[in-house]
Image 1: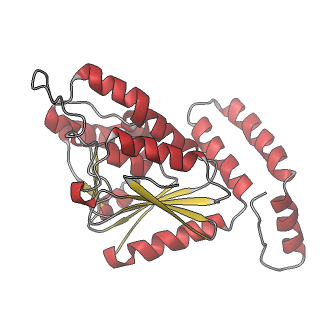
Image 2: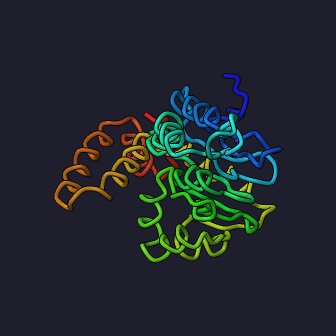
Image 3: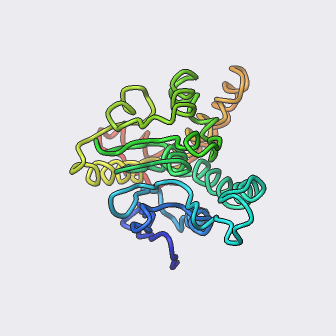
Length: 264
């Protein structure tokens, strides 16, 4: 598939999705949100997704210039227009990223700001370079966090740190992001690409069905009570236990060899 604001490449079982507007620090207009949605809707057999940004940024946020009122009669990002854009473009994209049935890794260099922060954090694993940072910039322009940040941040780092990020608009650099549990890992900038690619490849070669069920259970467990979660786990175990990968895992254990999972 050919896109204008992103690129997609396939290496083995990994789909690499690159935000590709480096001249705008990969600011995300509605078109980019739609293209990301489309790219992850049909994985065509890919068993992991790796998200990156071209150039020196991951994503600097929504493209306010693209959303601007050209007539000069209204504010740059009027409330009604913002609501419609979120509902039609950005929210479906974030939901699609969060519900992809395979592991998603994001590699963050430079800013992951505004909705770019949400895009990065929608991944299952977030790796940042030391120069990478996460910023809830909305307070600086009199807006409120969107893209699911109000849901994700308290669950990742607790209410105090989430409130700090949203109300004070402070940058959280890679090392601190790892320390407070916002992301999986911070690495040296020059190691970012290799670390992210290695992790995506490892996940892509794993038991994809079981990994997808884990994703589902983790997300749903945040909203369910303990009894409901126990049942959900049992149902997932039944589904995973009937897979070819489960049979392969058992045989490889008995034969004392490394399993060769197929993702089915």
